[in-house]
Image (cartoon, rainbow over all chains, first blue to last red; front, side):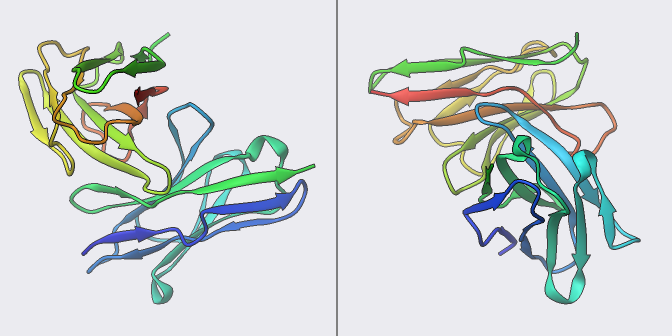
Length: 110
Length: 114
């Protein structure tokens, strides 16, 4: 079955440290891939998307993601985390429908 | 300002009662979606509508009903048949001609069954 997996339910990083959130997908062919961010009690905002081409994708708020076909991964990264980045992050994949991963809650220590 | 509004933000209901969640958009979007969000499970699709007077079941439609009488409105009714309705509900819409991934999300309604 097609699925999107985010192995880390919670991650805590110090402000200014680098961040990597993991995402793996299980699809027959490479789907379109996305990362969304959700602040508490809010809807989701699209951070970035990958369709094809360059495997390193730049998004909003200083985020980037790298597509690795050999690992079926689409990990989200940020070089230096700010306290305002604390939120829940969802990876999603699309072929026929949009499927979301379970989410990773990011906490930022001062 | 254009956007999606969901009301109320918090909703409490007793077991056995039906309750309707509102979703309104003034973005002139054709397609609208309802998702349910539970901790650790991401978003799951309940119903979607691509045009007025037409809607389709998503992955977890049992115990829910919708209507789409107007382009701007896509209310979701959580019926007493829904066994575990306590959750966060998100409504989304998509611009005409855009991909499903380009969804605009509302702020959500948190439903708690007492």
